[in-house]
Length: 452
Image (cartoon, helix red, strand yellow):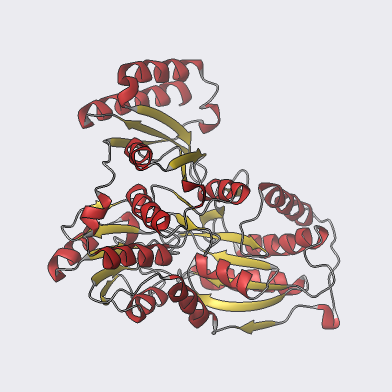
């Protein structure tokens, strides 16, 4: 698997790449690294462990829990809950560590492990590197001190987490959702319980699809990566809007009443204006990644809101927000972070706040989202190439320079090696979709030629 930790934890095919042995070993290593860093000093540590509904999550959860308890960590098993719920509970319960088992939007055979530090924040890169190093040393026979007797960790189920998280979501809403009819697509994932409960308690009339997880159907033709069923359901039921999550519900995409998609950039635009109106948008600044549509940048400039851009990955958006005290950030993919109320992307919270803006203004989501005009954007994934040479290939640099010359100031080019998959992403924006497709196709061919 190369470096175990990607941009969003450890991820791979469950029971092939991501085995029970690996899950157990990483959990032991994480406990040791955090102990060495002084996180557990003066008390017996506690961890919150949650998962999405994947079948493989059952045995991986058992392995993680066993590893933590064997290293002297008490474990609170919260069961199937969204990633942001595990992050929230890690902070709210004063836990020293959080662990989420999920492969997010990936297909069912995959799974992943994501660690949260005290407070519910993602681990820093250097801590992940240290965990990986300790795991490798243990795997190759280096002994470690094992607690015995009363020193081992205790394990208990913590069913109260569901209610605590729903209560937290409702406490954040600036207004109720009475009068709105909303279709929720839960991707047969981790939010299948909490999201319908939160929207219903907030006053919305809801229609749910993709909310019957069986361990095998997560993200299968539904959710934020497959919006077709949500679009059809919104039109069929005459709903005001639709909300789609991914498997672990850290993302939110939307559909307006006409069935048109509202992406993460547009959602950020709507929320930025709403938060500024409530004096909650600190420094009148939004943080997003370099993948954001150029139309988003132009819309923010027109509204007098500053845009700060980071590398791709919600962890880098979060780092920028924490360092400078910004309140709102996110990605085009629907990861939206409202830092005053969440330490990671929270799809349910994002959907609730988006719906609250519709209810509060009396305007349709289509009208609200029109503050931003999306420029045509083409994304091509180029597999089976050496993604490590993206920045060093002279031939590829020449192809990019030529593409940028052709596009001028009306478009842009971005080449990015994936942090989670063995491929290179080619993104081109232009004023005209045909030009964007043509330039993207030529660049994809150049990537294959230069890096294949």
